[in-house]
Image 1: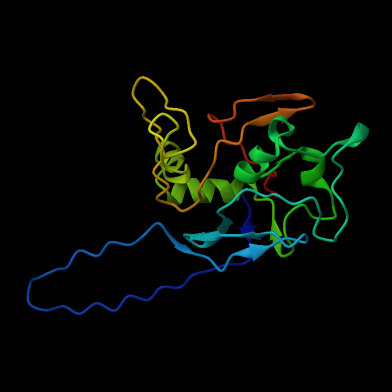
Image 2: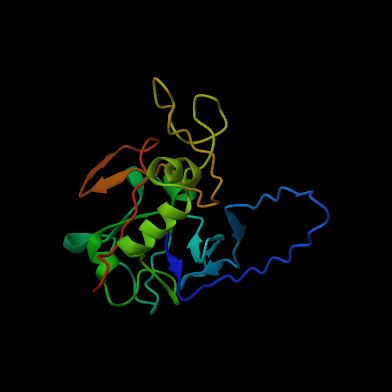
Length: 196
């Protein structure tokens, strides 16, 4: 997931005071963003969460922003599909290594960037802290219940996802060289160090 540059939402509330009555207003944690597309033409949903806009789907491109191909074979592999299974790609997108993240050709769709640690911290804080954010960022449902992609966590199910943020994190797992692990139970995202 990535943030769109310089997104600020200004919301002006006009309050009308009548007598001593007060109405409770609820607001969503997010609003749907404008979405985006990558150099390959894949389209993605986005969610505006606080003053940041995030991709709400995993990246699935084989092209950098500048149109160059991302290395998928040989000694310099930078992108993989879990278990090399195209069905996993259709559901979870692709797995990219740190060389792809750092490549100056731009892994993210143009005008988007890999978030910094500070940008993730702002997101987590906005969603109520680490544990609350984890639940709000995870897609809802479980494999066992037949309504999602996450394995149930026992015994308390403390971190069941409810996707109240619209971030829609999926358990795409991890890929190291020729080893794949933790699909259905782990979502990981790259973050760059915050400059300064």
